[in-house]
Length: 606
Ligand code: GCB
Image (cartoon, rainbow, N blue to C red; front, side, top):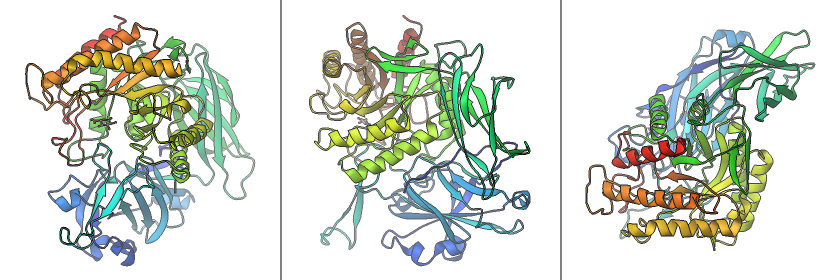
């Protein structure tokens, strides 16, 4: 089931946060006995009491932190546990006590002191467990157990399939293989920070802010009142970047006007990109005393889209970006603040103003940085490579979109929701499927254009009619006409022009690229060499320039990929996907210098 992961845990006058990150105990359920942990109730006592445990980093994917192939390739349940103490003052004050896991992939069950508190399905979005009634007195340790399952089926998002191999002359009894056809390793585990935090019994549950470019800010504060509590009231204070107060309102819902507003601008569009105000929401008791307080950061900006393209604060936007992954050596998809800083440093070095969260929602800490640096984000759902379309999957997909929108709706950096990447949108059922998911996503947020990264051809795709802007993934002279770099420009221009002529909606290229093994040189350019990657980019650049000079409303270019990343094993991948313009350790390939030169020129209007 999908649930609201709650506001990000922050220290405020009324709330307190403790990190539970570190080294936990860990144990796999055997592949041939997946339910062993449940049957033997591994959650009822420390894991170490029922078998051998190993040390496991939290946050991190579990796959790449040891030398064990069975751990890297594990399919099924994995178990984690640790102890935590509840601060005495939280208990004395009768606070709510919560555990929030930024993301656990793919599904999980969370236990405290042997009691199942919550279950969550879907990696990449937060899991919230209200453990108020489960925690022990302050002088006793609490056992926190998390069971994680990484199995993907036709009903999960993303989809996958477990195939049992029944030919016992060729396979051991009971042998199965987890198949999935998306192009990144299905890393699993507790991927993002785990935070223990408190809130008052009456608490702010959600805040919604919609701005324009004149300083007008509409806000809504949703709160939950504790049993028997009435007469709560709300107020809002807005502070500028120096934390000077600039506006105040006494209401749970209303409009504030900020005079001399400093707008939120993308990187290289203004000397002060990513300008953020702080909006502090408070709820108060009838006697005026503070009950709960929570701040969010707000960027003042207006986004619009239509037949002439996308604009921000009335200025046309041209997207100079890339697709990324949450991926690095050892950690897999585990959150690492050093990597976040490095990646934003490299994005800015490239002169990029945007990235797409291909192919799943990224950590909130990354999104915070995008807001603060002025890097625009196309916020993508985990629906990568959808293979089938039916109503059950559509309603699950809609739930994921609602959960994502609720998490990221206030972020100025988010300029679009991407419903999917490369769905098999030529299937007849795609029409109603995308109509359905688009409608529910629009109902959740109508302030941003909907899109998807499409790889079907313009004459067979059935998703685009439900979208506001059209991005396509195109690998001319890589997956088609391999080796024929001379065709790239003509084919990209023809293709994008057809899309535009068919729909009259803004179009852009969300992926293009070529694998380049670092240090492999071949001249004349040959596939997999650094020269080939460079030539393929230059061909695409020429196409983009031609499109920009034509009647096509061409909204931007996003190369694939920012950095090399891990994939499942396969004959088409050499130690992972090598389409990065940076290596997996974030060192430059020559193509990165071409991109930098182009993006900086585009930014300065040349
Ligand atoms: C695509 C996918 C992306 C792959 C890429 C590739 O179209 O969207 O996930 O990694 O192609 O390199 O094949």
